[in-house]
Image (cartoon, rainbow, N blue to C red; front, side, top):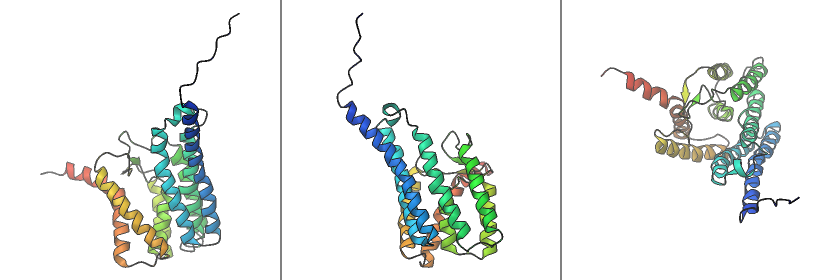
Length: 244
């Protein structure tokens, strides 16, 4: 019987597969960052926690384009990049921030644990929702950006009743089908969106460095960018429907 030799690997394929595996490991590093952020949160070193979560955002911004460029899905198919990304995102976008929001002392004491439970349950359902993104890559409903919600809670430091009602509203808005801009994947106004996100990143880093003791104009700009991301698509649609 003649034994057929396996097809030879194309030149450099081992290197490409190693690079593709490296992308998966880079994504998984986000889970380690989440642990470091949680350690800071448990110590109530909130600025340190947000610094680690900011690094996690950077990893999340890089790993997707890198995975597509290196064709990770084809070269390392035994690992699901989508599942890995969701696991890490749940830790960094939801679980660690939910702990920070609950333990911050900025909510009503009786409401804080209930709201924390509401955050993780609603977010788990959102992450499992096959309709979480529209066909044109907008998020549907509040997209479980609890790292951002926690950031604004610490930045604005509202009265406990206001903060508690705000968190409750965001939990409810998770299931309301309004459209939120994805900073990278939505084509409309992408240049403006990316410029505003870059500005936001610089100002947010400054706020964290200053332990949220920042001038009022910085706070206003940070809030303005958040409103743009949440409401830009809704306002554009209303403008188009308005009679002329």
